[in-house]
Image (cartoon, rainbow, N blue to C red; front, side, top):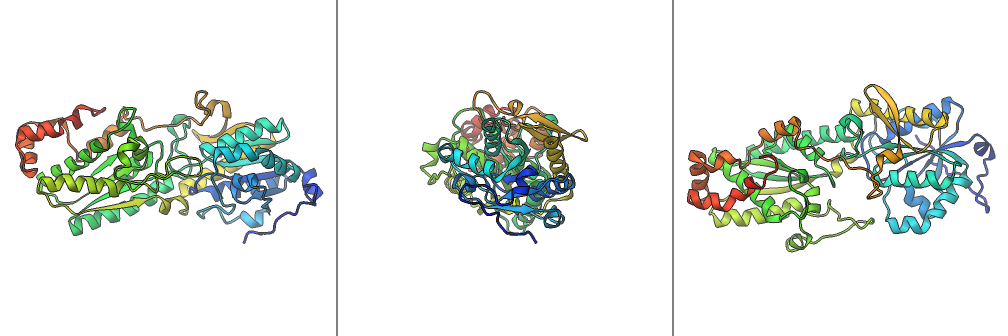
Length: 437
């Protein structure tokens, strides 16, 4: 069990355990949402640091804890972490915070780090955590060496060679298992499911789950042109998938929806159907936007006008994936990252992200990972021009150009209780605006 004791700080803020400061403490902190494999990074980092005679402390509660002035710092030893690499969640917990709070209280965070005696800092997280890591590295002026281990189940960090972020493979694996069960239920009950999957900026997880499970259709934000996305268009794509399936004699199906679609949809239009909430950072709380439910209601209304009866159920999949026990891929992956992070720091390195690529562990400077225009981490979107996407797209049941002519058009129009010309006029814009057609 992890020793939950907390180092005590005296009135001056100096750690009473002076020997720790002399040994140049290694600190570990986790930020952002949970992802399978966090404990693997922590475990490997502690073991490698201890093997080199370094003492390690974990900062409980992420950056928010430090920004709030809380000194929740616990000692970590090999005994504490030797068997946590195969467990989900984070023994150090994690958190998010607003940029305003971070700016106002950054000096408090830096004061705690310095007074604690942390010389080396391992940060584990995504975009926001990388931003904090870079900020700490700059402001410490050489007093604290910082290295970052990238994690996100969204798989949207622009790693070399398209290599996945840790946590993604486990999240997809668990997600596919859930979707497979939903597909069986769909066939058994003769209903449709609209399943919303996490992925704020990119549709990697939704596409990966949909493709691997053989879902009827997957919709991701990347397939739509930049700018505001019409809610009606998304709904019509789903409507046509249902009609096409019915024309094939199938009354059931599963649609996978990337939550990032919500962020692209015109908020004024979306607010007509759904209350829009925001998180601590001011971003839309996509997990709270009931995208599937709202689309279900819209699609149902369209189908009712056509006198088509379809049972549609909306479901969200997200929190079930984030703290899952990692699969072997992510266990190995995170051990490499934890080891590489400590090796990099003890060799004098700082200001870089640790990656695992082509069988080797490498460090990439923060400056290469940050977009100069936005100041944020570069986002890796799904490239819909690749053959990987082409294959996924080919196995979806959705309206295609070929469906708007001949017998296919007649069959679909018959299901919709419309004339072929009326059906084509009503839905042809979906295909005409498709980026992949």
